[in-house]
Amino acid sequence: MKKRKISKRILSIGMAVVMLFGVMAIVGCISESPKRQVERLLGIELPRNIELLFNHRPTGFVQGGRHPQYTLFQLYKTPDELLENNTFRVGVESREIFDSRLYTYRGHRTINGERRPIVPEEFHPPWGETFYWMSYNARFLIFFPNQLWLIFIIIGN
Image: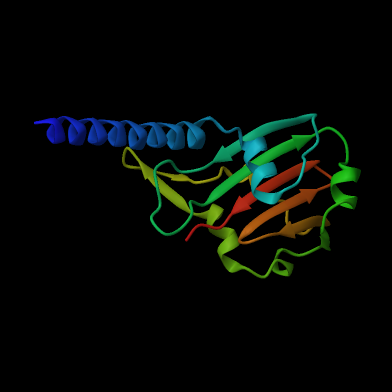
């Protein structure tokens, strides 16, 4: 009888701990702002004066992989410190970024029977202009100085 009570108590405590960690994981995934997520994933600090224009990140869990993401920020001045303190390269043509999976934002999805772009065309990168880019583990940060756009792309798998 005493062993049964102890077993139930241990099982109850174990279930509570598992549920607590599950809730913490879900809340952590949901509550993180796109700006904070970019900073965490790339290990950099973004400028304070930044505005989120567009963010596409599918919800749910991916087993053994990562979700694609496309996030566009508007800056109000050139982020000199960001460009100087990180490994940005200068680009002129999109093909300079060698991963063809980068362009999945051009795709479409069907919502209520209607075909819609994943990322509206007005938020696509203005390739053909000079840009600055860096990458880390299938994550790209691209700065377009003419628009003062900072685009963060995660390639899903």
